[in-house]
Length: 370
Image (cartoon, rainbow, N blue to C red; front, side, top):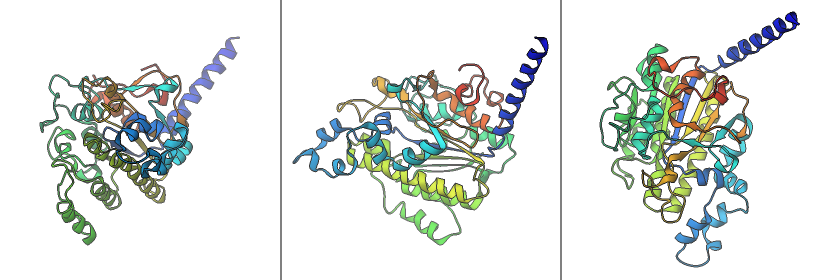
């Protein structure tokens, strides 16, 4: 009996050792955020109640959005809206948490439920409602995971980059100004390529409707060029139109932004798979800063008076993970776990940087419960 117990211990130890070894395949991490991209559209596609409310003339069935994106089941609708995300990424390469109808929830720990507090929680692993309680341009009081990874991996400034559509990322993304590469808002992007120089100028000629936010097209193009030129090991791409069009009450543009972001995910993925630097070596987390309302009256809004805004979603794509599709009947995970999870993909312990930060997500890496 004793010998059997010893053999069992050896098997368990070898299994654990192999699991840790397999996780070493990740050499690069990419964080993608889609500002305020509602769980309702991500898991259910086109919202017919909102579309009906926004259809002022004629039958809703005759509207372009209905014809392009409507289907009878949530699964069919979301596949029409996000064909690459659902048809390829979540089916073949990753998994997603946050569909509460399946018993999976993802929540913020901050009680603000708007952008700066959400992004700061993502990037630092800790809610700071005591000091981050507005979207004002104040320097992040905590060192971010981007700065931590730059130091731990001994990377230069171009190797850790944040490209954001919202200009406040210049304050959110780093505690020490100038620590990493940040390009956000209507900020010019310097590059040797003539076409990128032209795009950099065009972003201020073709202004978005928002003073502090540029179109995602420019953010994504600059991020892709930086990726190809400098091959960063750590990158955050922060897209924003899913939030800004929603605030404007423009459901057509909101839905269009979801679909365009899906196309951008495909372009990014295709490039990663074509590159020896990234193929089979890159882990990705896709998530949001906050949710938003669930009805035709409050879908445009979020914040502490909109309880649905505390619910978010989180997707994981990694060569080190076998999970596929939607999480079901799992414990709630939290926004403050993103930073530690990114680091764990690289076999680093984020608690070195912030002992109060959320822990790596247990279902991904095994071990004790969150």
